[in-house]
Amino acid sequence: MSTIVSMQNTSDRRTDAGKLDVDRIRQDFPILRQQVNGKPLVYLDNAATTQKPAAVIEAIRRYYESTNANVHRGVHRLSVEATDAYERARATVQRFIGAARAEEIIFVRSATEAVNLVAHSFGRSRITAGDEIIISAMEHHSNIVPWQILCEQTGAQLRVVPINDDGEFLFDEYKKLLGPRTKMVAVVHLSNALGTINPVRRIIETAHRHNVPVLIDGAQAASHLKLDVRQLDCDFYALSGHKLYGPTGIGALYGKYDLLDRMGPYQGGGDMIRSVSFEKTTYNDLPFKFEAGTPNIAGAIGLGAAIEYVERIGLDLIAEHEADLLNHATQSVLQIPEVRLIGRARQRASVLSFVIEGIHPHDVGTILDQEGIAVRTGHHCAQPVMQRFGVPATARASVGMYNTKAEIDALAAGIRKVIEVFA
Ligand SMILES: Cc1ncc(COP(=O)(O)O)c(C=O)c1O
Image 1 (cartoon, rainbow, N blue to C red):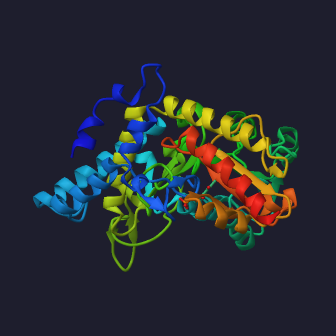
Image 2 (cartoon, rainbow, N blue to C red; image 1 turned 45 degrees about the horizontal axis):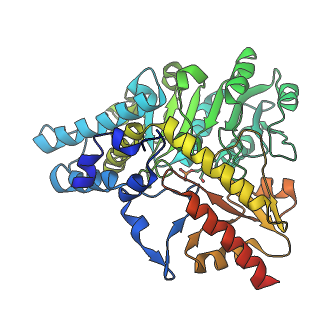
């Protein structure tokens, strides 16, 4: 496929001025060519899920057409090739996030499952009545509810770091909450509801001074921020494939080897065992101990292809482009007096969350859809954030590498139209 061949060359994704060549990038995403309601699709729902480049679609198609077999069990050729491709994808994730060893990468269904794995497995062995788990007030439900379930089961308590009116993590409050009872800190890297980038390095450093491990929810961050888990020194990092230009149904958990090694299994079944008898079962080595049953082989290969695609373009260049877009979007929307931004942190990426006075966000989303513009409306699986800002829901535009300034202008024009309709 010519699109894929052309992706071997990174220089053709830069303009002469050294910027991201968005027109070229857009050619790699077949879905963006379509019209919605008679208008060119303006896809600004990247925080919910990103679109997939041809390189990812092609990698999955190629896998099913030429390699499909179960992994880790067969001696026949296809099984060996499928296993190699699956393990290569693991090595790609390892390289992308800067992990020391491939065994530290556990393939899971989603970022949600990554957090659940840690809450269940780490939590069950380490957390007891009277212990405390610290999260922040800007977490996605998937980094709240697993810890609440753990608290219900163990008698531990959840402590919540508050945020200020701009949607920023209150570091001094965090320091006050950390204490001898704290057994885990779990914080989002980049908030899906506010766009806030948290000072995760400092959060981790501070927790470590109390010997407390830290899980970072990187579901949003991985496609917008360059990542190095060793430099961050996080203990766990949760990743989502479908928000990183990869397929749905695949994600990854990074965990430090020694921690993962000491944790009990998450689910029981095939592949996660070394030997089984009715008297005693012993468990497999990392990472297989946490991958019970047939994994999402095609999904992992698709995720590997997505990461390679992102790497070829370069996250630095993507981040620079997205920062320009977010800045442009913020300036444009702030000129509309009826609009109130929810989330104005100094460090922000991708997400523009807003409400329009007197108009329900669902109506905003419906009218924008008539203009071919896809944004998300609702609580964004972050109901405590909505409560904090006293709104039932927001409209959220979120940019990815393929969005353009013209699309941001279309959004601003769409918002003005919504206001006219409801005037
Ligand atoms: C910050 C954050 N954490 C976790 C999740 C859950 O990710 P997944 O869809 O991979 O389960 C999301 C999804 O929107 C998110 O935005």
